[in-house]
Length: 133
Image (cartoon, rainbow, N blue to C red; front, side):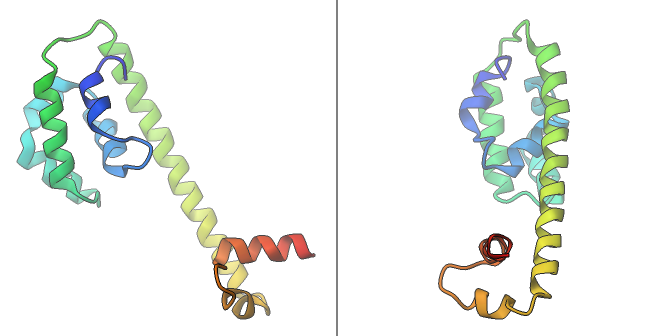
């Protein structure tokens, strides 16, 4: 993201689905300036991003803070778009795996007992069962 340091400072990509979603379609300051806050908020909401209005405002504030186009923008934005798509795909795969683990675990005869233990969720209980056998 060295081509867009203002946005990098404004958003936390590691915990913010909206930031990742944003980069998949609008990886450059110019693209974000063109869409504007209202349209960006609507676009993020349609993609089920939490705090869409706040993320849109932070994003547009960051684009206003950076008026210089850095030499790395063309290559960097292409890479960021590709990486954002790959991370999103991995997130979907992990969600599918979690659903499969949950579905399979809940069919186990000990599922209800393990889930009744304090602090035990599906993943910990399934891990416990896997290690116990």
